[in-house]
Amino acid sequence: DGGITQSPKYLFRKEGQNVTLSCEQNLNHDAMYWYRQDPGQGLRLIYYSQIVNDFQKGDIAEGYSVSREKKESFPLTVTSAQKNPTAFYLCASSMGTGTGDEKLFFGSGTQLSVL
Amino acid sequence: RKEVEQDPGPFNVPEGATVAFNCTYSNSASQSFFWYRQDCRKEPKLLMSVYSSGNEDGRFTAQLNRASQYISLLIRDSKLSDSATYLCVVNGVYNQGGKLIFGQGTELSVKP
Image 1 (cartoon, rainbow over the protein chains, first blue to last red):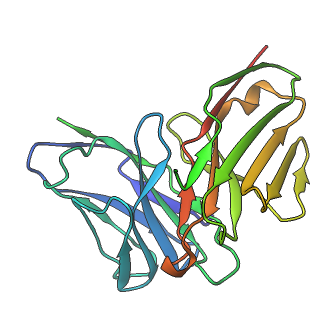
Image 2: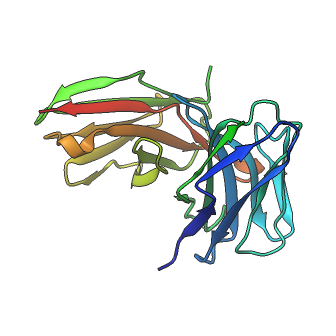
């Protein structure tokens, strides 16, 4: 079945540590996105990528980095510069802008907590 | 003003009730509108797209009012399984890749 796979489901970060969240999709979607969700709040966009080897900052990119070396993969690194990383992280993909179909499909999420 | 703003919740309704959620958006150039459903600590799932002429899917009806810049979701004959958070999603600044903007969500709790 086609879909988006995020891993791990739960992740713990120590002070000063970088951690990487994995996101893989086999939907042949061009666009991929990372969102952060805090309790009782909506999703906020961290980074997005519309094509391989290109990505754009979202609204809250500080303290995060991404890469898009393959169409299927869009890993997110939470760096030590992100002082408040505890949140639910969601990866999503879509066929892309300009296609007339911007519906997002989400992975099951990663809950990141600080030790 | 937030780019996308939803009715504050939670909404507590009995089974069988009809409930309506509203969502306003600030960018008059927005072209795409969606309602997503999110269960606790799960990923959002697309409930329905919202079309200019309004659209219906079973017990769910979505409407768009471009003049007043709001969309609505009507749920008829509420079921216990409808309990969730409903997210309004709007296409943002188009020339910045058409990123989708999420509202903060409206929580619905359907009671027996």
